[in-house]
Length: 357
Image 1 (tube, rainbow, N blue to C red):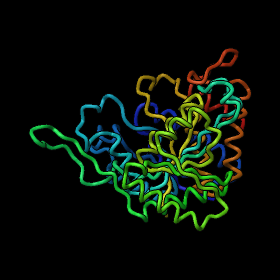
Image 2 (cartoon, rainbow, N blue to C red):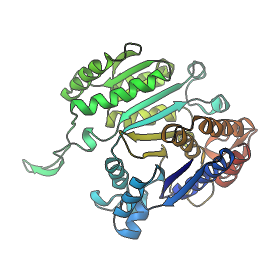
Image 3 (cartoon, helix red, strand yellow):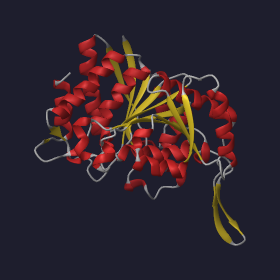
Image 4 (tube, helix red, strand yellow):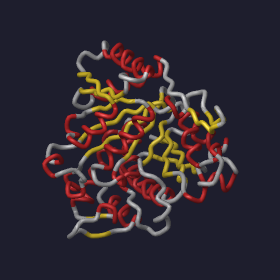
């Protein structure tokens, strides 16, 4: 099978970790007889520096013509002084919009090999942590209009609009229910319907969509309670369905309690066209160029690409098993280092995973 992958290395540690992911993808393609063609494009701060735009049109064209998009990270203090429209993060928001990527899937799993790095109390961690956050990606306050900053009664006033229509809610609910069918068949819809009209519509439409999924258990939880429950007992969750801003916060919380953001991948998908696959962590500019970044989340994002984007489940399993074998053999990067383990840099960790393929 031949597939074209558009690489968006981005900023900070992005180029370093994407390079390791590419190395693993190349080794996997060779082992299974596939051909992956890689094309590289600019996004974020790197695109601003080169083209004056966090998402040049050339990048959009390459992404649309690819079978999948593989992203490193965007942003950094170098561009903090830019206007809102020119910040690196705008490139990421815009590529999601351009590709129609309305669903973000973020798994959070506590691997037995990294149980010692978990931030939860030991008795809580022992119950297990294996959940998927299904986050709506193109609506809510990040995109709702009107928005802006203006003078009201002589005072500077900022405003954003939380906005969802029923079709936007229904399509992400379907993704969550379909995802749950492949897991433990439980969906918890998270909103704030006790105070927000937008959330009341969310809850109504999710309940309507659930009628077609009687085999999936549906529960509801306010977002503030969900944030507490993720720390108190994350084992109660299977699939968390939620909107853009709540999902942004909860998915980061769910992932960091596993011990390291450097271990967790994500996928963004739409109704058609290429999906976008990326680690959930940021660009970490303070360690960029020092060969200390953890590439495993990026490598696991490649596995999600093969599984969800290319329907290559066996190949995805192969990568995930290689990552776990690398950890079981005692190799660690600085962010997940434990006593008695062997410390590796970014490149060396990528090499160890390739060896175990």
